Amino acid sequence: MTALVSRREALATGLVVTVGVLGGSAAPVPKGDSKSWIGKTVLPKKADPIGAYYESVQPGKDEPVRTLSRALYAASWEVKAEKDERIQVLDTDGTPCWIEKSRVVPLADAVDFFTKAIQDNEKDVYPYNFRGWAKYLLGKPDDAVKDFDEFLKLAPVGPGPGPNPYRAVGFSNRGLVLAELRRFDAAIKDLNEAVKLGHAPAQLNRGWAYELKGEYKSANADYTAILAGNPNDVLALNNSAWLRATCPVEEFRDGKAAVKFAKRACELTGNREGGYLDTLAAAHAEAGDFSAAVKTQELALADQGYARKCGEDAQKRLQLYKARKPFRTEPLKPQ
Image (tube, rainbow, N blue to C red; front, side, top):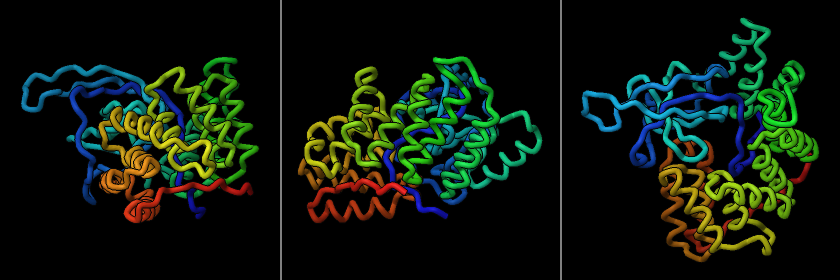
């Protein structure tokens, strides 16, 4: 098993899912228990749209209120809440969305599930994409690349330029994993191709790959370009804040701007997303407010899913902040 890089945010994509959107304020950071879905990672079973359903916005009311519908593009989500046969996840913009449990598969069962899907229907190539992402999340990036290779080999070549639901997704997701493996030139080549095909998340992923490689100017350019088009892009806000808070090159650090961007990312996600709170803690530390850094890092660690995935590194940062020291990243050596 390959140890995964403790990364900021990148976005694996693979489908469009129409789901219910629950109105009202977000819940506190979830804690869950061993029998709960809360904190678990789930993947969609199919790349087909899911119909919107009904959810009572005000608990206790007999008449359900029809929710709005929207499309989700991520290849996996962390469960934030559950109610009966539905789970709540956050869209990339922080919107709480409800999905039926029957539509998703827990990460622990995902590789077996998608392997059977491939065996049952050899013409359906999308299970290779989801199985590849599941293998990556399970710490097997080399095996994941093989699945993305197969996906790109079998996926039909759609019209281009413009959105391409197959090859653009494959290039973007394989680029993420190649960056994780420190094969930066191959990663950026894939991500450039995905950008060319009109796949919006690929620019964020390319910025992340540049950041891992230590090409901070290029990373900053990608994040800045995204925010110029959408100042509320949560992922770009988070990544930009992280770069400004933790970059080992002083010219790219700006504690005040880091706090501003990170606070906005946390606000948009209801202050309950551990990864974004972790970034805000680092931003407070860079700005010299170590009391706020400690408090925010402890709140980040209260997110069960985040603590399970990144708790060891997050605890180390917490100890740094208690010692009144900021956190610094280091570029990774290519392999």
